[in-house]
Image 1 (cartoon, rainbow, N blue to C red):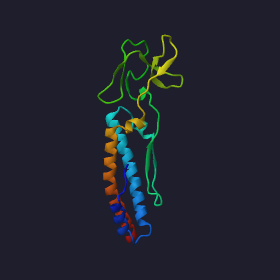
Image 2 (tube, rainbow, N blue to C red; image 1 turned 60 degrees about the vertical axis):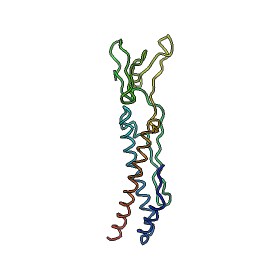
Image 3 (tube, helix red, strand yellow; image 1 turned 180 degrees about the vertical axis):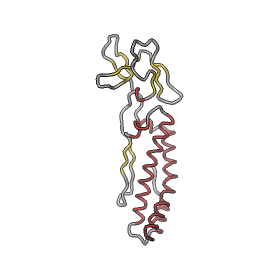
Length: 187
């Protein structure tokens, strides 16, 4: 959780006291810009640790922006476990003939391995996934899944990095927004 401390608020109010509503506007603008930057950093950090596309991470993150009346930003990621095929698998497409070697899956960089009894198949919908048979019979088959994006974002190293980045960005961004408000008055 990232918060603006009382010193930052007091500084903004002191410098922008001659501009009506200047401090709340500057704080809200700074928070919104920090939130966008934090989303970018979160995607980058998740991709350093996991084999996943940026788009798959980005589409789960939503930002509720701050306003001068409500200076709170909420960054939320929601989603369910991702199909194992969203990560690095070998082969990535269904083979044309029966495969004798096991499927190799990698979710976390530097880890992973073969999955005995798994196979890659294309469903009628066009979805390609990694499956295994539920019993001795041919059907039913069950799809394999990896972690969800919120689980990846919740990893300790990712969370710690995101919070550090947000604190650093907030300090410099608030100064920038205060300067921007002052330049706007001079025109």
